[in-house]
Every structure is written in C-alpha cells, then in structure tokens.
Image 1 (cartoon, rainbow, N blue to C red):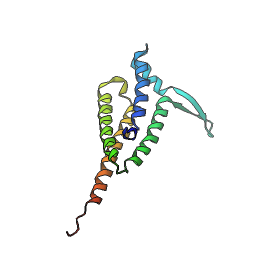
Image 2: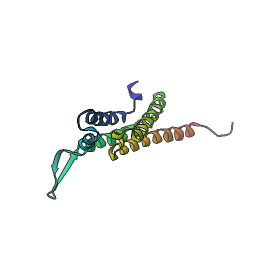
Image 3: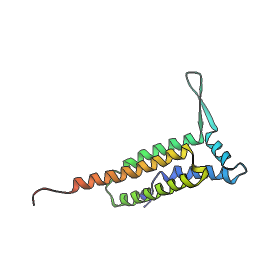
Image 4: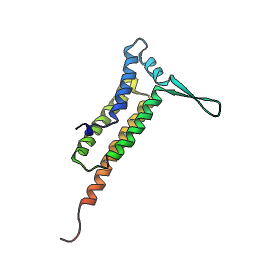
Length: 141
C-alpha cells in the first residue's frame, strides 16, 4: 500500500518543515524564505567561482529525482496506480491551496514543486488514458 503514496509528498513535507520552522521561530516568513536561499555549502568550480547550494536547491533536486520515479511508476497498470493518481491529485490540490493562501509557500521554490506535482498528475492520467485506449478492441465482432 505504500507504493500508492506519491513520492512527491516527501519534498512537500520537507519544504513545509523548513518554512514552518522559520515561521514559528522568531524570524517569521522572512527568516523562512532566507533559510531556503542561504547556502549550506559551496562547491568550487573549475572557472574559479563557487556554486552555492541552499536548502531550496536540495529540495528541488530531490523533487526532480522523485518526479522521474513517479513518471516511471505512472506507466504501471496495476490497481494501486489508480490510488496513486487519486492521491497525487489530492497532493496537487493541497499544494495549490498552500501556494495561494499561505505566505511562506508563495515562493519560486514551492511553485516549482507545485509544477512537478501537476506534471505527475497529468502524466498519470495521460498514460492511463493512452493505455486504456490501446486495451480497447474496436475490431469486427
């Protein structure tokens, strides 16, 4: 049954933890947004400059990897895939509401996560429709 849970739920929860821990703390929404952008570490590049990697970047990287896995899962024709599509739709609605109504979630980082969740929903339904159309037989009876 754990296979039915959308993997993109993980970056949404991590993002919520980062943002809400900043909001609940003394800094408010500004501190939460700053926590997403502050570099955690810097990777030296050959050009001599440094690549600053922040919490938001790591969350997006994780979300991209999990989106790839979700797209692979959407090609499954098991019954649990329907439950996964429904839960992905619920996650999308939750993310959309959070993006529109909660100040800490109105960031570019969360918008990109929201877009990935939307792509997961669309891919799931499109793959299901295409595979259902191929399963139907319209030949002479």
